[in-house]
Image (tube, rainbow, N blue to C red; front, top):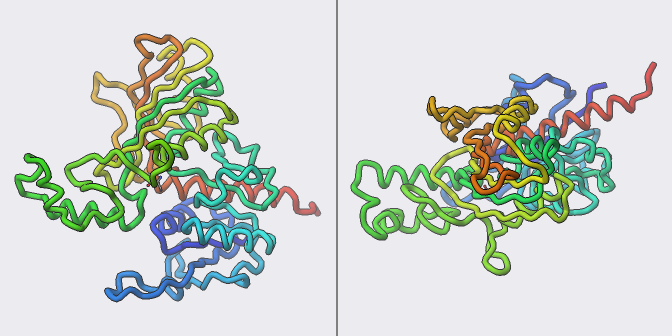
Length: 364
Ligand code: 2RA
């Protein structure tokens, strides 16, 4: 029998991308059940109750059912794309009912009993899951880690220094709406030429961001942690270490939000145990599953978010050997934060589990 799949958070930004990806990829699933938590209607009616909505998946309309214990009856794999607190409460419920949970929240990523998995890098760790939960990494880590995993396998990573250029859809619909609203407010004006003019035009409409995001870059993502670090910067550090199996890897991240709708970019300084060459790195990256090498500056070829958005791979360009360190590479990496950064990796993990479950069925 085909495994039964539940998608929890089907009406969210990542949920919508996930339904599209499930409709495009080889159809291995029996029923795909769509689940969401009911939300109180806001006064302005811009948050309609997700339960009862009909969404299209695999070309058919499916009605969203309410999150409850019974909603997981008969489910083999449950993909969660919901806020941390919803996952923290409901993923264990789904697991207790026998489903393998693939969770895209931050609730379980650093739990030592929950593997944090990127199929191209550490697929083998997905089989050991004492809590019945597999965690999907944060979209910023995911947007670079497939390329770094391939280089690490050959050269042995010894240090990582990254700066992110993060798209607003990392903050979901609120992030996208905020950028679009601010772009309308500044379009066709002379704004962006005197201190504070863009901030005054944005007024109270900063949305989830601490500063205007149109005509601007904002050196902040996540919440304030000790000693001035942002949660997003610590997440990149912790998750890269866990996925690569390098618990002591020195990692420094600076996270920056940019006025891009979707696709995170990262500038990466990666130091290795062994000497590197650009030619060798090109060969590794060109052969790595899930990576596209796009690196010919003489022809203006390098990845940019507006070209990468909507695609599945991790794109790498601007590969250079550090001028002062023959063991280090400089790279520019782009990945669609809603696809490989979230929904695609979730779908791949679900497929990995489905293959494992099929292998367990008694052969006739
Ligand atoms: C962001 N990675 O880009 C975070 C959360 N999705 O905002």
